[in-house]
Image (cartoon, rainbow, N blue to C red; front, side, top):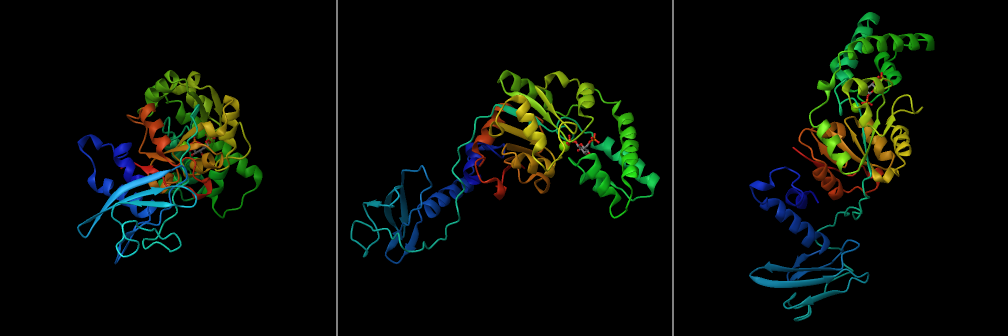
Length: 350
Ligand code: B16
Ligand code: MG
């Protein structure tokens, strides 16, 4: 799929410059050697077809050692392979037989679950790292608290707190340190005070590039929109960004008990929207958020590096220049129906 989509879905964003011949070759090999199960014997090429469910026929020519071989393979359960024209010499004259009982020469890899994407009725956006960048404010808030407490804290540690609830973030920051529940609560209040002071500066200019346009396109397309954030300050941030009224539902740190990577916040959003989880797509920047959305059975768009959001169905650097029509197409081509537990690899953009 990755080879095929380089040009079919323009996943690298440069198909206009010409066809990617090597990728095309890769797709051909996947089909002929993979699904067709062609292997080369001293008598000629032999097929051991394993067509994906839904494929009824696979027909192709194969040139080997100056000879043209035609294969016309059916996808029926009994794998009746119908050869026409020239076939494997010495095996069966003009009518090649395809060995169904032998292991193919070229080992098969399991093919992805056939793709039957669900129609998308709603998009659920994470807040920090997707609609705006509050992570710097979280960093400054945690840093101040950590300095006061004499605890080491840096930007690398802050990075690992993306999408992590306030309480869990503090527990990570405290590391092995033991504190009472009252002390824990007091520290959370203190950090949040610092954070609230900082977010007063947020204005609509703090919306990340591409967000407003995508929200507009979703509205035009009749797609519902919700927020799915771990933050308990999400409403205030949305208000300051000027997009609170754009949300058809809000699911945040106040809505559910279990935070990401539990699926609860996204399931809550879907419920509020009255849309089935399978018809929702989540846009997230955090590994914990992608995991939560996958556990909710939703499609996922990961923003950021592969190491962070590699489990998502579609991966983009950010939302700048992203159009709903393109995103929808990428999601449709991704293996959205693959088993969630496999965290099927995504379509990565450079
Ligand atoms: P609050 P998201 C998350 O937002 C942040 O990424 C994370 O750093 C923060 O700890 C969490 O919200 C809780 O935020 O302290 O405001 O409740 O990415 O889920 O929108
Ligand atoms: Mg986030």
